[in-house]
Length: 176
Image (cartoon, rainbow, N blue to C red):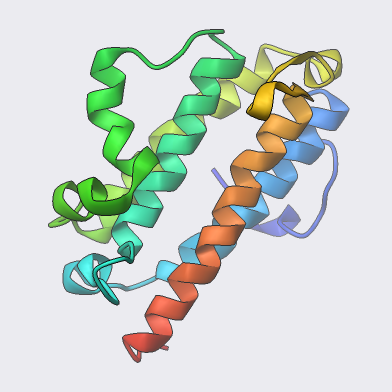
């Protein structure tokens, strides 16, 4: 889905309003750099834990998909995750011990597939709204007002943050 020719352009994308196009442009570049950071990793490397407090690369990848899915539910469907969704995405949202125990044994294709499925759903949702939607406000963290623009910025900002962890783990694995 990533258009490699325009990857470094934050610009209009057919099918999306101007500001949503720019948001998607940024999300595309972030995802490209994330995928580059995990290229060719084995299952063992994806499951590796630096210590008892850390997350695996696989758990972080699933975290990206889980966060994005949760924001779809929150901003587009105007609801919280249900029990079924929490059982599916909860370990990846919370990470920690539960994530360490439940998120392992998958190859890179598994994680990329989850990322792609969730992203494709996001892109379809973004086609259904316009720039005004980005500026709609609602209560967010700490009972503060936030708009959809900030919320979706946070989706890829979280990915950027955790991608730094992925790169550090990759270095510890001596994988260049």
